[in-house]
Structure formats: C-alpha cells, structure tokens
Length: 342
Image 1 (cartoon, rainbow, N blue to C red):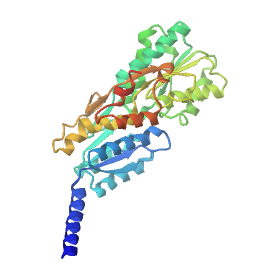
Image 2: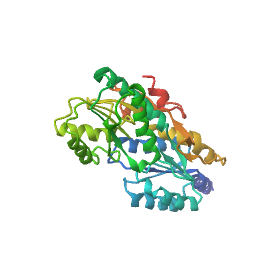
Image 3: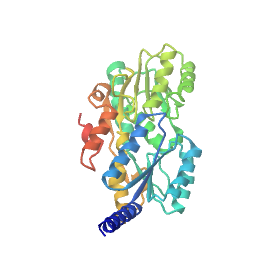
Image 4: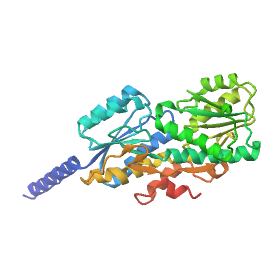
C-alpha cells in the first residue's frame, strides 16, 4: 500500500511538472550569428537568463548572418510552438518573409534595430546616436585640425535603410554642427555593410581615388564599418592622421582598441533583451500585448545612446563583465543605467 501511494504521488508530481512546462510561456530568440561579434551571442545569453528568471521556456536559434537560414529559423519557431520571437537579423531583405511566416502563425516578433512592418521595433535612437557621435568627433576635428579635414568619409550600410540614413547621416549632421564650414566636396562615402572585412576593398578604392588626403575624419553605421577605412589606411601607410568615431561601442573597450578609433556611441547591444522583454514581451506573456509599433521613429522601446571618447570608454567594463553585472541586477535594469554614468 505504501509503495502504491508513493508511486501515485510521484506520478501526479510528474504529470504536474510536464503540464506546467507545456503551459509555460515560450520565448524564441534568433541571434544574428556568432562569427562576427561577441555581442550577438550575448544578446541570446541575456534573453535566456531573463526568461529563466521569469519561469519561461526558451528556444534559441542562430541566423548565422545568412538570409536562407533566417527564413528557415522562422519556420522552426512555428514548429517549436513559441509564443513570441525576438530577433536580430542582419539580412533585412528577408524580414518581410519572416514576418509573413510568423505572422500567419500568430507569433509576434520583436526586431532589433532594423524595422519591418508588423514587427515590434526595439532599438537605439538612431538619429540621436548619430548626431551625438558626429558632435563628439567634430570637437576633436576642431581641436586638432581647426575644422579643416582633407576628407570626411562615411562608412555606409545601405541595407539598414532608414537606420543608416539617420545614424550615418546623423553623424555628418553632428560633425557639421561643430564644424559648419567644411566644403561639401570633402564628404565622401563607401559601402561598408557595417563590417570591417567587407568594407576593406571599397575603403581602399576610396583612398586610392583621393591620394592627397591626409587628415581624414571617419563616421559610419557602426564600429566595424569605420574600422574598414582605418584598416585600409593602415595598409596603405596613410593612417597617421585618421580619426574615426564609431557607433555601437562594440570595438572600443578592453586592451586591443585601435588608437585611431577615437570614440564611439555605446548602445550596449548585449542588453537589448531588457528593453524587449520589459516593454513588449511581458505584456504578450500576460495576455495583454501592447500595440505594435514597428517604425524606427516611433519604436516599441527605444534604447538610449551613450557617446564616449576612447578615454571615457576605457572606464566601461568589457562586454563579458557587463553581461555579468547586468544579470546580477534587478530585472528591468538596463546596461545604460549601469554603465553610461562611467
């Protein structure tokens, strides 16, 4: 009889645990791909940790920086039965297909930094970040060159659409706010795709087309993009007076920072899940989804930019330590709250 009671109790507990797990809210996360940048992996790590603290199930895939993979992942999320998806998709041409697949299944999507109609947009204040970074660089151009650069080079990322227009264009605006008399013909652009390796060849071509340029100020979509020009200038022996200011803060902390990257605007990319979950996913999980705000100019949640010179950036912990501190903080605390004051 005692054995029967124990068996019955264990069976009931087992059924309860299975039922509880089956009924738990399930969050899907599509990270961008780990090869490019550590922050892409960290975005998943932070989302997973918050989901676990909330008692949710969590299912992660990687888009691997590949269009076909990102669409396949959308189909896998449907098969897995997730209740919502967060994604960073660096191949925005597939966002419409992803939204069609997940939308047909009634699965809401949060997209980081690249807008798509029907998806909740969570991302940086792109125009504000651009202007802040441009003004930061402008102060150095004024101090060191009396607002007389030979070139102002923009590392564009056209695939990001309006994000590139606001972010990279905003940097030109910010620089012009400090140095308004730089002639228009000194402004040049190349396509970097937001990647130091991908942008290297067109950056070299731009420098070759402007052989007399020495004082070169560089702005762009992100840290990786502006470093394409820096690396090209170093290869050509023309980097002595290059000053680049990036966006995103991905390559300006730690011991191995290129000295020509004189500043960046921290987005604290690793911590975007705090915004996405706090301002969007929590409502969905509670059965009270917020209105879909998909436009970058009217986002579901907006990340505050944190401009910093290279010297100021050295006071910010490296990403792994930031993630550690972020996960130790109360849920809802942002990386901006923790680190921008430094």
